[in-house]
Length: 180
Image 1 (cartoon, rainbow, N blue to C red):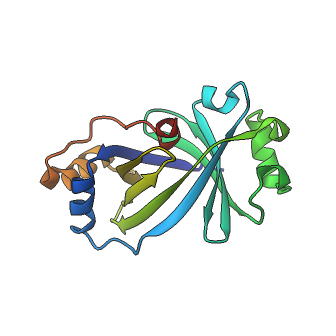
Image 2: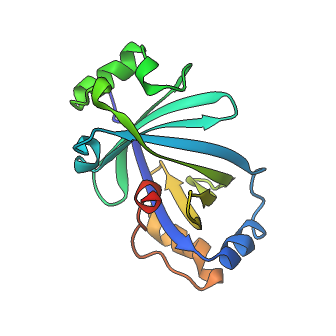
């Protein structure tokens, strides 16, 4: 079975660049997603360069476990679930993922929650996401190019950014890191 791989390039931008970008493409209608991240008290998942969250969009809940392979590539295990409380998960596939990565469900606690207003625009080989993220103490703006097909994502992303006089060099800190 092929690993579920995600490649994402992220850059923080100013509010003005964010607004200009969303007016330059026909993005989808924006939606709000609330992310609750979990870890153990000894930061077991963070120490694996991973993240575990439940994302809620309307009444839909999505479990996600990401484990970093390199600076732009993650193994991403994701599944819709019927519960919003992590401790209530009974799904055998998710429990197997946790076991595979040596994560004890009963040792996990919510560590942060924040909301993102997201809009997307699809390209042939990937998707551009424009995110306004609302943390308890601040708001930031991020552009993310997520791609699944093999191509030179960095060159393509820089082509998108060029009219705004910005360039992707490396990923900005993750949303979970920015939450702290």
